[in-house]
Amino acid sequence: MNPKEQEMKALFTNLLKIWKLEERVTGIDLGFGKFQFNFKMEEDLEAVVKQQPFHFDYWMLSLARSCSGSESLESRLSLGTVPTFESIGRAMGRIIAVDLDQNRVQVVIDAFKELCFETNVDFKGGEFYDGKEVAVSLRYEKLFGYCKLCASLCHKEELCPLQLKNSKRSQKRRRETRDGNGG
Picture (cartoon, rainbow, N blue to C red):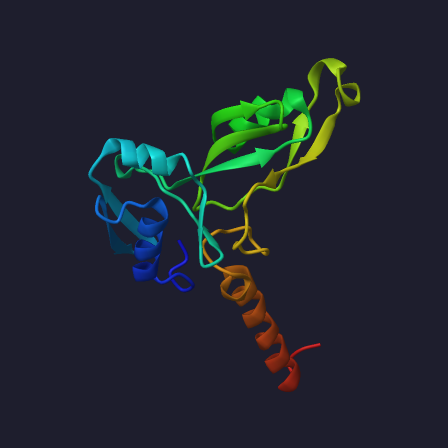
């Protein structure tokens, strides 16, 4: 998912070894940080998808059926309040499972959109917090290798468009000040 940091050839070789499917799966680099695995057997595909999310070279990557047309990432979110699981899960993406014993919900999210680490929940009925809207922090399991500035899974901070934009603005201000045009 981050081609500047992840070598695709190594990704294919290593994931196939981890999955123990070297003879039954082939991989191809589609460019633009996307790749495709061709599974010979449906059972192999289903077994691999259940193991998500995956990490390679300290970056997350996701698998989605190519016929679905979506770039999704299946991830588990740990949540602190039992009644909020389904409502928060639906707001994040498609719910896969709710685990009340471990206080978490597993959702499929769009891996090309920014991650959400906090959301507001309206506790209607007054059962909790007197019916007020409360900020709830979200914690992703097995999450690392994302941009801390914009919460993207596709690049690191040094290459963040927000960082580059601010850097160009600062350079322009320094030039204006040096040339006598600025404050």
